[in-house]
Image (cartoon, rainbow, N blue to C red; front, top):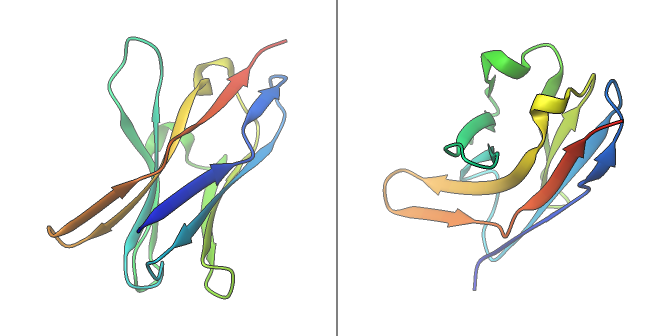
Length: 116
């Protein structure tokens, strides 16, 4: 049974940092394209950052220069480092694993709230 378990969310002040973790089980993150998505209230879910099986990373323009994605294959875990957080970054953040068009898994989400 595939599981993606996110952790690291919470309440942080504007300008602060958080690191989200996504621990995967029953799949190898180095085979999948791993991504972080977020969904704010009343908005569509959007891609924040992704890392391909080959290690190529991509981040959304809205977070470029502030967020970065990485992975630790030994721990089978993907990370989202979030710096210089803004109130508009407030959302539920989801981990996703995709393998071509045949596999698509989601975590349960972790809440990130940026507020003073």
